[in-house]
Image 1 (cartoon, rainbow, N blue to C red):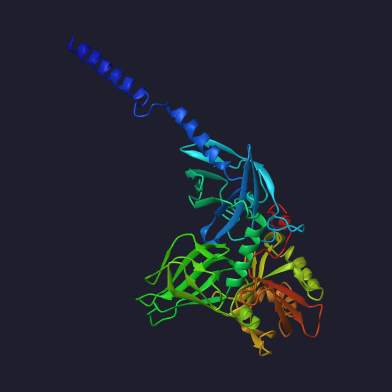
Image 2: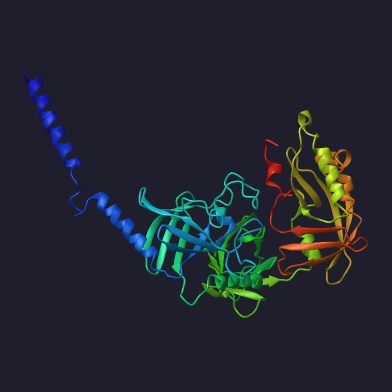
Length: 454
């Protein structure tokens, strides 16, 4: 009998507990679903308060930096424009001198908080989150690491703070003033970026007291500064500072600590000889104007098949034909990248990245003009790896290299302080032209070439 009494007492207690847990939380006067609906309505209302749209500080993979994206909400649609990221990004300023735009559907829903989702493909905006991005070859699965779904952290008429649902990156949106055009945002950022660009920066200023040099370089042409210094143990250290470009300079994603110095963004100022930091005008980055000869011999440059001149293209075609059946079981060896730059042991060389190997073959450069606009490439056979020897001897890479090594080229570029491309024209054979690119890219411009099923 006691057991039965205890059983009923336990059941009554359990039901009492269950009854409490199923009741609406009396802390709030509305139901959870009503509060969710109110949150969605409030966010949606804010989105429409910017008649000229919102300026979004967009970040994907942080080391690539941030980009200005414009978005205007109308009903259930969002119209986007953006700075042009790279060759295959359909954005920027069009031939009509207007911002290139594309419209897509969006929705706001509850998913562990209020979420804005751009759920219809938009070539401008989804470019940052698409896998197998043709302009970024390091991680084809992640692409540029961007988001198209964002948690709303704050929404008010003066700013909207989002977090990428996948990356957790902070995305800030501010209303675009009525008198500011989208075109002016894109153009002013481009002008500022070119004005402030440098192949090398040096940390200086009246507050700089170290007896060593701290330098900064751009991250392969992307929007992040890579600071390098030697720590107290004599070890080389690097600090990456992602930034976005605005009309008045560089704005860091967050402050960085570089050898004890807190650094946060750079002001454009009225001289391109140096740029002071936003949080401390007694610290600055001094710029350096390299010659084009120095740029080639101190960096890594990417070749692209469409930019190879008529003289050398048949040599590349012959090598690609040999590679068609040079792999295991006579499978094709794909050529991913072709570069002029440095080997893994920091020696100047031409390099390839292929399906199986990373061959390289050395060179030295001669500066033949005082202003650094003429270079002669000399073969350096003492710098090569076993794959380099194989490709040179068996796969016709020697014929390709012979269109560069032993030749003298005149040099020109788009912007000398930090060129995004350098054009090399053979002094003795004008059809022997190469264009070298600062940004990593595939050698072949046809995405189908890299399809594993081909």
